[in-house]
Image 1 (cartoon, rainbow, N blue to C red):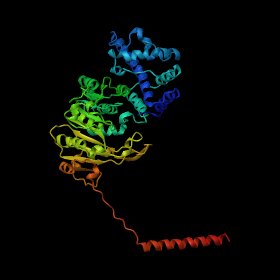
Image 2 (cartoon, one colour):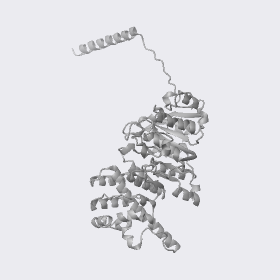
Image 3 (spheres, one colour):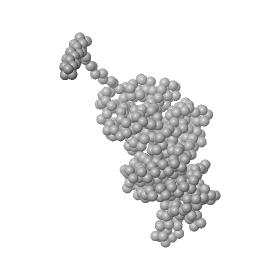
Image 4 (tube, rainbow, N blue to C red):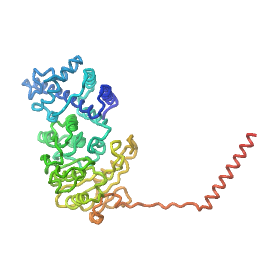
Length: 487
């Protein structure tokens, strides 16, 4: 967990950027990402040098040649600000090296196409480099926490309905589906890669000993984590987030996930975790025909569900956030995707969340759908849960509160046998699939829950009037007493 001291250090870096004229949070994080990556390359080179010295062998896969040593963080961090700035901006300088080192080093650099260095003054660069140098990020947990804290500062929604999913909601979804070391985990709208990083932390927590196996470790590093993102800035930020969480070679694809160009996602994943964009509609010609065969729509929230079904292997499972409209929308496409999930796949759970969960980014009401791809049906009963609280206030401030349903949601979901006897007046209950079909495949919890109305009785008007008259008499007596006292 990030400490108050670390937060203070990051806040100072943040303030330095703002004072230097960079006020867009995404731009600030992107520029810090570049600097963190330069520092990371230097750390990797140092590790390889130490290993070579210990084994008395040449350096294996060196990142820097001898002639490039001046481009290393440890070399330029103490330079005069003007010299350091020239070192970054000159041809074949630090930033050019960062964009071109991919053939020899970490996979992050393959996302550097179009990257722009925007720290325009030597003073700002020197300030930020010094501050970042003073932050101890020697272990993976601290690196991840620092970057997560940076990402939490993205306080406005992005374009096309993008916004950051709260970490505790991601963790709830990961706990629901329980990733394993054999999984291939995908987020087809990965953004900052929050779902993938939390899934990685879950694997480390529950399967730490298995990760010592070379084959499992290689799968974890090279094949387990897959993401798509068409915004090049976000894919760079997401790539760095994964690297700082100890995932060095994630399979991130700079592609429009819904287009035919996305050839990397057909029956590849065993697990999908996603919060796809809710806004906007697309021209049908821009969408992969295989997705349109599953759901014929222009709405992104429906198309992404089709994409997820296309990308899952048989037996693969998914936990996906959708806007409430997906649950009850009356269009042919809404009905088509709900029938697909219920009749051809196995829909297991619908968890309705309050509208404040995504504040201050958005006030939309959402739900989590949990399902398994079978292509042969299997839905018998669907578990519904009506979340009322997530541990934070449901206003824009999102301050910690005592009420929190998340632990109960996870525990009840993993014990569905005990849910069969619950009343429809409870917070969670099971609904037979035939009842859902009879209700036009409506998945809104309000369609099935029962509301108990408590009868209230009131006094007769004559009694209320007599009570008012008694109060008037008492008031008059007190007023006369006060007049007497005042003489």
